[in-house]
Length: 253
Image (cartoon, rainbow, N blue to C red):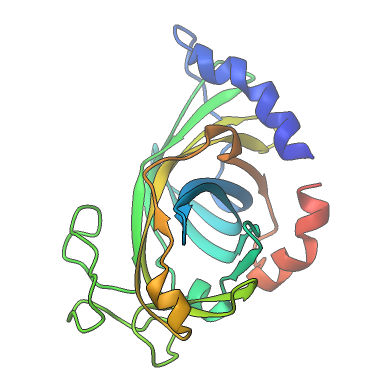
């Protein structure tokens, strides 16, 4: 898969930091880009508290803008697909994804003439299922009656709903906080690969299945860096999430 191949090729550049090399204009032009991202979280699963690695694969569109010498990128997630583990499949439906905030962050690019270039995106934090005064630091609500809890997917349940199938079926109603930062290596053709850092937090406010209410998965502040990767490519202006869904397999083969 291209993501893994390019990620391995990028490691020398990321490690070296391109220090001491002359800065030069980079081909990260204003325009629309698509990415495939994978991110891992260590989860303790009930009833025995077994540690398991949960991996989520996401597809997103990024609008890069330039204001003089300043670059910024806004991110709109199109799909979020958890990989099954422990005999349970989690499903993040379209209403949940559509309600995810669209973070905009500054982007810096450095490197020698001809590339490759080191690209750093500022860290962003988003909260789904609650409105916090300080999204990055305020404690997540633990009570569904907390005034900060919202219903972003509009299903009449507190927080955002995650659908479960397999060994356990039902819906859990959650508040999530996601923090991400992208570190990439950019080629002259606009293709970029790199790594993700960050964390995922989740609080379960309730569930449709009493079993799910009693046995709640616990998200730990741990990841597996080898799974935290992204692949980024330019796409035509006007590309939609529906378009990306149709061409994702060929785009990121």
